[in-house]
Length: 478
Image (cartoon, rainbow, N blue to C red; front, side, top):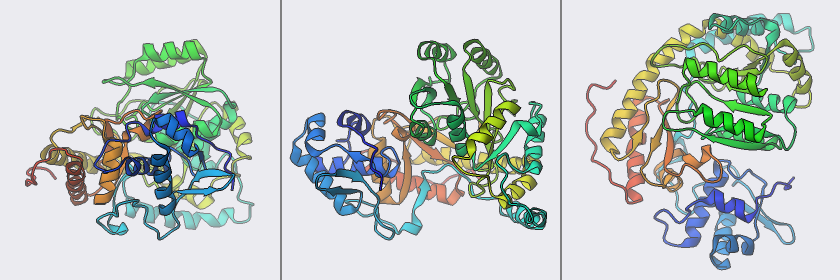
């Protein structure tokens, strides 16, 4: 096992934030719970060496006994392992062992409501039809070796046609098929960035994008989002002062805030990229899922823009197909860089995607109708049960960015798990423990499940001393 990754005491203190928040009776229990959450949501990667007891105690300003007791609790629960002379590193309990930590959840694992992932269920009828179509097309590819680092021509053509229909004329040689949008971003980093390079990111942003930047050995440079979204003047100043290699942006229903960049600001963003020579990586994973205001065209088609997309949100997360759109020269460069990561995407899944992509508008409209209803349902339920919480008003995408009114997001995530809800706390989307006032709440579950999830969140919030209202019937929300 490779445990070369390390987190020092000062960095871990920033990740922990205000770890004393919450109902746990002792300091070591609170510290253990917060460390456990950091491990579970990936802010401390697995097999990462953590500080020695004395180092962390000094950094936190607590006794070594407190840290030693917290570490021992986590070792007992399977979240840490230690070896004399080698230190202590993060771990996960084996399958079948509860990950609930000091206090067991009140529900069985199969009753856990997952609000940690913003992903809708599959449109089963369409997926079944696409699978049947893919199987009938597979025979023609069986005599080949099956490896195509750029992707099947039929799928690249379908993706190019979709871009063209959206207002960005595209040819198949501008498309490279990947194993998802995350894979597309990692491949872009592999091809265009080097260890030590600065990468501008929105703050907050998609957690796995931050992890990809770190794994590439690059340094994320956060640019805060304001109450209304992007501050392009601040973005321009950051680019001038830090000279980043890339900037990763999500202009369509940004994850997790749901903000959408206006048409005028898209033009200004492209002008900024051209003026500074900065390559923009534009993540369009949820661009098709506008719920209010209609569609906007892609950001631009210049050689300084790399656009990534995926089947995961419009179709299904289990269909691991994505893509990037760039200049033909850049696509060839990406294809050459891909060999060190993987050889190609699966043929069968590409054939399924080739059947689905031409039907994007029809499927996306069905998604939009369903998501509008779910969004209204969750907003109303939160208003009834948790009136002190303030969800934002996204015009699309898959979830709310909710202001809790107090820096309790990590404590709430721990409390919610005991009630049977997996929750994405705000710090998961930021750097150095930021966004403790926020949680992301997706509206990607069925209405009855959303109702139950909010009821459980109300119980979790009440356990932290928050105020909730009694359950009331919902009216006029479907």
